[in-house]
Image (cartoon, rainbow, N blue to C red; front, side, top):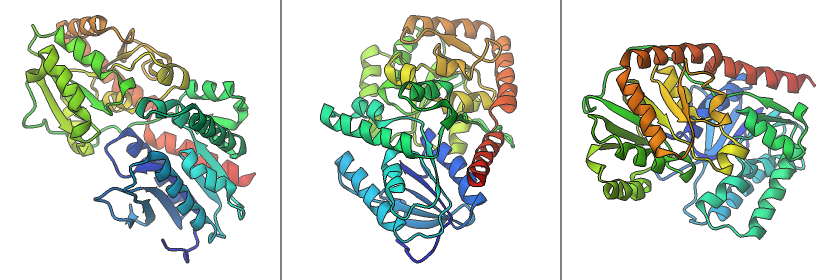
Length: 388
């Protein structure tokens, strides 16, 4: 790692970047905003076996990737944090540090040479999400919660993508004046998008990650109830193929495997082509603490609507923040396959109305959720912090 160069800005994320995940899209827009506004900027992220440890990204942004083969998640976070802390010790000109997680936040806030403003971007907290992925002891969870609270209390500003997350943090004792909501955004297509050559004639689509809270199992159960139709289901996973094995087996058990098309880690251009020509897109989020209490801001909903593809999503606060009426989408009760199947079936009977909803949704995104506007909100926050 280059310790000689002096930087003005830093953006950290314990995520592989670039990636097909929604986090990759968010990092692209927010890191670009910070590091272009305050050059000599560094983007500190995770790497994998294919990505270089260092590179120049997007016309001048320096990227440093922490790469580790250690299978232990918490040990990887420790190595990531220690590497960042060592680098910070050499920095004298930093003005702004923006971090997406506590693994970057703790060293940024503990740096004895700290003389910069700090922004904690809270999209999710590990104390809520890790138990869905790993078997985590109460002792470790308590320590993680302590680190979360340290970051929340000691940063200068908190940015969240939804009102649900803002309320969640306020319940933890964080002052509302310290929290700013900057929602996720989407980009409207600038050029014509060609239909994928291998796309079925008529299909519905799910795209994104395959974590348990996404509700893919609910979607598969609903799709089984639509086997009398000519519909196919396309699932575009942001994960590698091995993460979809359990869902493949479940689809076989339901007898629907032959009418499901699986795609993995598509480029944005490829993914948008599949989404654009889908009859509708599904976001069947589950009714769990991760979605109801902590909250989120589903990029899959925004990106589908930006492509004029109508969306059926779970009726919960995080979705109502985006789909504000039936003129721009449809909300149904979560975890109810029969209701989801019925909603899809009704839409199949009214194709012209569905197209109208898609067009309305695209206009709604242009008015309320354009990435350019969101990035300007973030830039204004930076200016306000520095002026103080």
